[in-house]
Length: 217
Image (cartoon, rainbow, N blue to C red; front, side, top):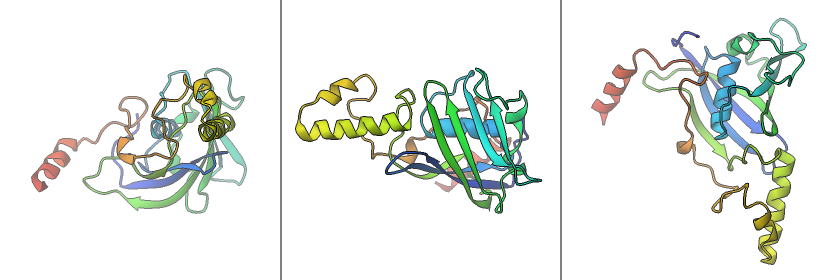
């Protein structure tokens, strides 16, 4: 397990590919995160389940060379490059202002591709609890709806069905989308980061931080 002490946070903008308008999130995570931790955070951002057997991979330029390296966990043979310890590599050893971009693919029930861009490296706020989502746009699609292209087709069909008042598409996708699903809705306060699912432990001084916050209320 990584140390829970850190001084800086990495601010990323994460975009779900092939979505129009784009679905994206802006997050801040500790600089001691591993790629496995970042995988869990992205799943949390999308409100998707974190499965023990999920396959995923990151593709990012090597620190010492310009060649792209694949850092993967392939529980079901998703990537030929997978290694059992690779997800524990630290994001701070790869991301930098000069090498700020990466791609990420998650595959469980559907395959989803993301772009990841490092926007800033910031000093961690003393009384903030990380990770945090600071902004985002549009609702997350259901993880098992078939991927980004299928999701876009679904939204188009529902929009056309609603305008014609036929309701056929609504019935077709009734088992996939909630009745009150709004593709344009996103509230960062509804993002919940799971504990014990790959994230580093909570800070040792968490009680002191909370007491400080309560005293300032």
